[in-house]
Length: 151
Image 1: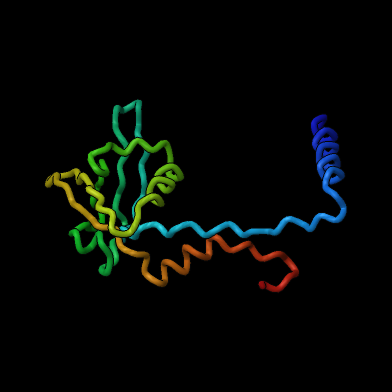
Image 2 (image 1 turned 135 degrees about the vertical axis):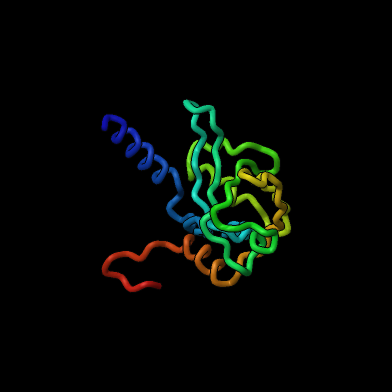
């Protein structure tokens, strides 16, 4: 808490440095980022296990019948061990999701499938469908404030 007075003093000094007749700086809303590509499957991520010398993997949970994963032949219960030839080494779910949001519509993704029939599948990311785009955009809306109607 000892740094609080210093920060407060710096804030006051910065406010005092602005001439009183200067107009306030315009508030510019952050531009909404470009939506990620849609691969069309739900999964659970299992991070690498160093104790067992095992890399990370995805277990496919859901494949809607209208998306790129379905068209490529991906099915539920499939185990994915690599993407574009790279083992899955993400330390946690968040790191995995951060990487996935960099995929753009039209981008090809090569999945390495493990199991009795190991193979590779190539998906081409699509534009987010309207219902999923609406959900994605809602994540950038400010949270409603208690006691205030939404704007």
